[in-house]
Amino acid sequence: MERKEKTKRMGEVIGYDHFGRGIIKQEGKVVFVPHVKKGDTVSYIMVKEKKHYAIGRTIFEEKTLCPSYQECGGCQILHLSYPEQLAFKQEKVKNILEHYTKYSYEKEIPILKTEPFFYRNKVILHIKGKEIGFYQEETNKIVPFSTCLLLKKKMLEVIASIRFFLQKEQGLTEAMIRVLEDQVLLSLKGTLSKKKISSFFLPLCDILFYNEEALTKKTQLEVKIFDTLFVVSKDSFFQVNDLGLKKIYQTVIDFVKDTKRGIAFDLYCGTGTLSLLIAPYEKEVYGVELSKEAIRNANVSKKRNNIENVSFFAQDTGVFLSQNKKTPDLILVDPPRAGLSKKVRQQMKECSPKYILYVSCDPLTLARDLEEFRESYQLENMVAIDEFPNTYHMECVALLMRKE
Image (cartoon, rainbow, N blue to C red; front, top):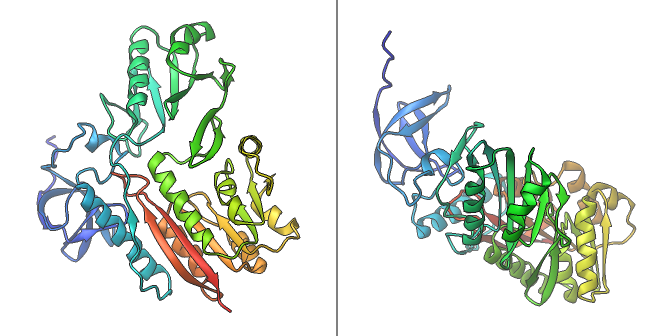
């Protein structure tokens, strides 16, 4: 029986959705088509149809710098020039703020650019037999690659060595690589002996883990941000773009400088980076993070930098807010992509700080949370940072001030 060929269609791309997919109107239905540019008329086929929308795929896809672009799923807007990417993200933040909140914010939201290529300092790769790569989007199929435009070049050298190793030895299942200031942390998982792993990989890195066991005396990376030294463990959260993190942190510092010196809570503080960076501008800072390992890192960094006015708590945010008796002047939050829970939002409102400073990696959950505070707080300032070039992801920093 012959397989029926899908009908080819033509349509003009009239805009983008929040994921960077092109929007085409066809027969009263919105069709989302990846890897197309606004203003182009493209040929496509339907791959999924729902009642009110459909997903399409282009037939003659534009060539890009990456041969794995169409399969990998790690990038979504690589086909756009960097100025086009920045314009898309700036418009995206503006639209989300207008559609999902009722703030009257008339300022232009600036977007701070970073380097579009070779910026990621951390990657997790999957391994099956001799193949190493990323999972194809929404599958467990490995997409091998010869190069990646997002990863630091030092990281690509390590991956090339792993690929060489796999031609002779199979048994690895995962590789995590983190590169900070040319220091390499490599964490491998698999079924091979420690002896084989050590003899091949120890000369390639500064820190080596195998199946969660440290095979080197050194277990933490060190990185200097501005004039402050930080330690970073294997599993600690740390921003993946070196230039991007400096622009995020400088934005936070600039916003904090404009607030009255007082008591600050830094919720979801991770390894304490922001707690220690804002310490010179506050009387007291309380950093809160659930991960005990991250708090250990934070306390080491605090000691290394001789900072006295910061205290760290390995505690759930909600528990901390319910038990702490201090009244904060500023609450700084840098939550996971899911944003703040309803309980934490309510507890923050009960604390009633003069300022709320919100660092977010998802504009949609940011907008939802900001709207929760709108009755009591006005939006003073907002900046977007292109922390993740060639993807639809980005960071935002928003400053709220309590209405008097």
